[in-house]
Amino acid sequence: MTAHVTGDERDSPAGQPRTAAAPEQKINPLQRLIRQRLDERGWSYGEVARRGGLPRSTVYTLATTRNLARPPRPATIDALARGLDMPVSAVRAAAAESTGLHYYDEGPAGQEHQADQERELLIASIDELTPEDRRHVAALVESLRKKTAPEPTDQ
Image 1 (cartoon, rainbow, N blue to C red):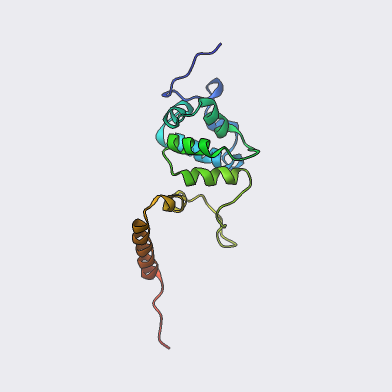
Image 2: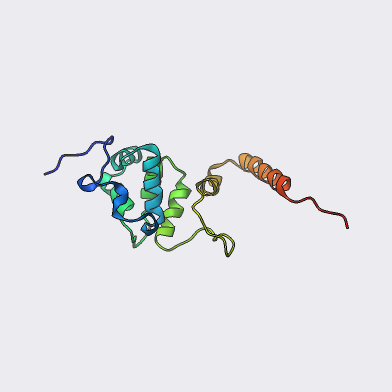
């Protein structure tokens, strides 16, 4: 029998680092999201599970299963988002993409698509804003776009 591991310790099999199971490019988007958040916050699978009200085994399975047959249930996604302290829509999008569904278009052809956490956070967070806050964000974005647009020339 093994002892139960507390939330402050890294919950990994046989003391191995969580990312040792697969190279970064071989993991699915949900695995990447979970692992990045654990690394950013210094949390364990157990801590995320406790914060979200999930079994530790569920968090571990989602963080280590490469090929998901189907997305997790909505209640699991909601709880995982709470545990990771992230927008539900970001977790939902990562879970869907991990099963072959894609929510957003790729960047323009010929450009390498790099994980842009700020972009993903902005897109995912928009659903959590009030209509008034959305208008403010839209106005800010529009003013920034005009600021960076080239000035028209008269010819």
